[in-house]
Figure 1 (cartoon, rainbow, N blue to C red):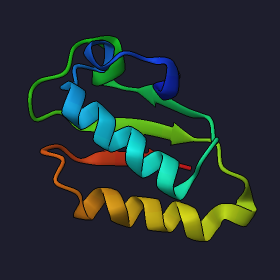
Figure 2 (tube, rainbow, N blue to C red):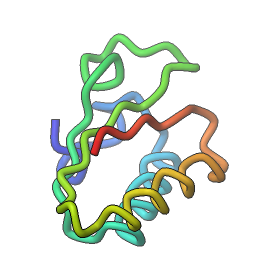
Figure 3 (cartoon, rainbow, N blue to C red):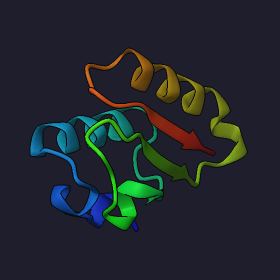
Figure 4 (tube, rainbow, N blue to C red):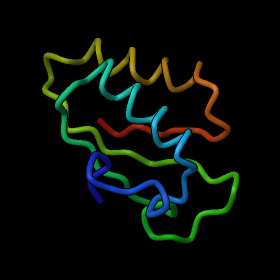
Length: 85
């Protein structure tokens, strides 16, 4: 499920958390295709479930991908974000 075209409720996220995820993606990897998978994409998430994302970044964006991962870890999101790049 494409994250940039997905409404917050489809990923079982609040509007605030959805906006935070989008802001971090836009800041670190603008314009990159990102897909969600796992329990949040299937609609079977629990409140503590992580958000699984596939990021289709170019190999030259390795540093930006690492910075994005760190930004998610340091964010105020109440769930973990797992990135597969």
